[in-house]
Amino acid sequence: MRNLLTVGAFFVVLSWQGAIGASAQEGKELVGTPAPAWKLAEWFNSQPLSLEQLKGKVALVRWWTGPECPYCAASAPYLVQWDERYRRRGLIVVGIYHHKSPVPLTREHVGQLVERYGFRFPVAVDPDWWTLQQWWLKGRPQSWTSVSFLIDKRGIIRHVHPGGSYTEEEARAMESLIGKLLEEDVS
Image (cartoon, rainbow, N blue to C red; front, side):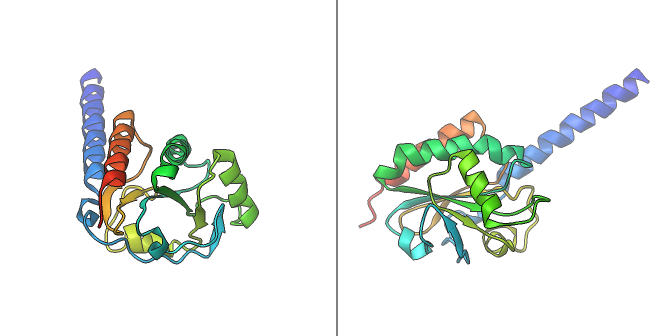
């Protein structure tokens, strides 16, 4: 019985590590492609933004949902930190809420979450996941829906964080890439 439990534990760990490795590869095919269109009418902390308005800036676009997603909650402080640290240098963080909660989707509900996480950057609502489909889910199964895209000043996707929360190493790598993209000359 003990050997059976050991073998079972081994396969659980092995499959968990495989899932992490597969997850890290998700989205690599999108790097170097133009950011897709978005259809987002409901905004907080900003007038509605278009992708065209983001040209000339580095944009970090992060899909997130409410407290039922521990990864979204764990990632929120990084988004706030990067917004505060790099906004004046040309980074625009855009949070896109995609509803998963059993609570009905209302402007008040999303507004409470924006306040709870301390988001001062633009936040849009993707009520029917149309934009998430265009950017991430269309035609490919993904492990996560809380995905991040780092977009350069020309509107090209330069990095995809395929979801979940940021590890310390991933956060350092993201911050380093933000700095490099802000320094790029696009003239």
